[in-house]
Image (cartoon, rainbow, N blue to C red):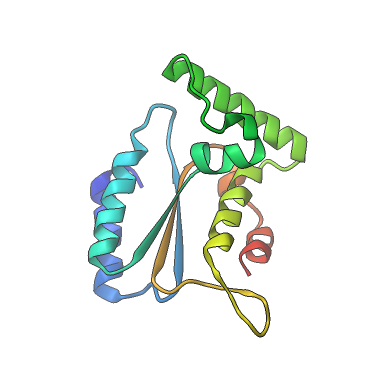
Length: 155
């Protein structure tokens, strides 16, 4: 998705067709310095008009602190320092876990935590009319992770 206008178009298509009955996951990918928050805000507004719940997951503030508790509340000297540090932590996570999709899997874990537990099966049930927006994927394996791995995580 290249622009906020394209985000609005996607949300309008979903609203017009009422396609999302359970969950839709949108992973945003952008170059360093890209204002993906504008796209997140546009998507959020459009999907709320379409009466969908939006769950926003920011890899930097949501997944990194789970993997690296020392990042909780950390103040960086500059934006460059923040970006450089998070890139280094991302590489550290990928190498430590031996899985280049680890940050995307962390986002999937955040989705799973939001789901209600079925009392009979103890499985977590997909949420109705919920859009999960993940910001921001950086490594090709986060985008092109094995469908079986993702399906296993989300099932």
